[in-house]
Image (tube, rainbow, N blue to C red; front, side):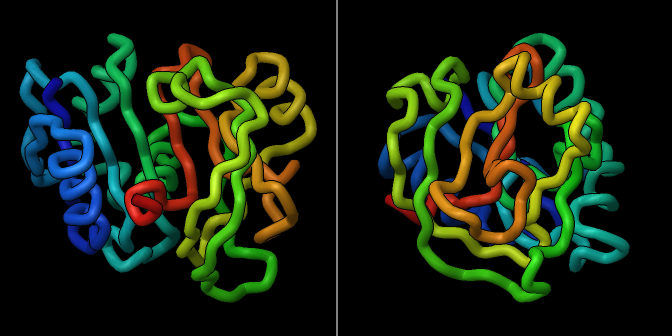
Length: 199
């Protein structure tokens, strides 16, 4: 399996992600700079955490217009697994690949701590080894990690089983304690916590 890790100016979790994919999961992993396209033989794409473009304007919005995103969007339509972690999640939302928005934490502080996730959807390529309602200890590190959707969208993503992870308790004011979501097909997943730091 070949995995592409997309690197943006300001990415800072790309090396952690690369280490986990190569040294823990023993996957063929390559970095791809955001200005270049992705090869057709990639089996999965990861958008890692960090502060792309220094979070100018708002987190992820500039990176969402990088040349590589067109390839990410095409791959998403083809059903290729795509995971966005923290800033990668923000980028996927800004690119229109996932529902909702990510706002400043309710406390207005940067949060760096361990928390627990509850698995709500184990049908995605990234959660199919978990049990429903399984609790996962995991670190978070973000300033704009509060997931928000309006009531109508919340009803819709619940109905379509797009909520992938919830926090076990109120962490940053996210709607319905949501920590991660997927697209309708389940192949694109975004999450705020950092699984690569939990290994």
